[in-house]
Structure formats: C-alpha cells, structure tokens
Image (cartoon, rainbow, N blue to C red; front, top):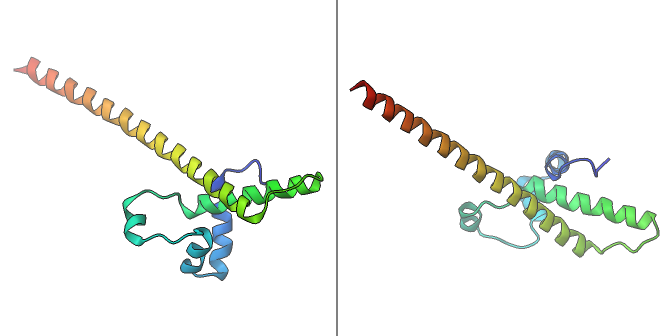
Length: 124
C-alpha cells in the first residue's frame, strides 16, 4: 500500500489527517525535530512538510516489514533521520527538475527573441 506511493502523496494524506486534529504550529514542531528560525526558513527552499511526513511514514512502514520478517528494525530516531534524508533527496530532485525546466524555457525564449529580431531586420 505505501511502497507504491510517492513521499508527497503519503505525506499529503498524513498532513490532511493531522490537520484535522492539530494546529499548524503543532504539525511544524512534529515534523522538524530541531528548531529553525523563520528568516532561515524563508531564505532557503526547505522540503515541504508533506515530503518530511511522507519520508518518515515510508520509513516506519519499512520497519514494520522488517519486524514482520523477523529482522531487526531501526529505532525511532533512525527512522526519523532516514525520513528526513529521503524528504530532502526528493525535494532536491524536484528542484533540479524545476531548474532544468526553467533552463529549457529560457532557451526557447532566446530562440523566439532571435527569430523576432531576424524577422524585424529582414522587414527593414
């Protein structure tokens, strides 16, 4: 059930459930196990809370699978660390895709501008 879904989908569902019973501040404190300042949060593109929740949930489900198979599962702190790392990696992947898309758009804009300039020159 969990393994086929992205961190974002898992986390979005968890966020929606938590949002029904907890305040935004409580969710933020739950998601981030360390304090961070608002200016720091505003300056850099931190992973969305949905990614973090999804990453942690995915790690918990993997730990349940280990336990069911009779293997030793990581502890709670390790699951949170792994979940945060997975969320950061997923976020970086999305940011890279956004940058690649922006570069593609920039190239198309430049091509369009050259085309317009050439057409304008030939009409003179």
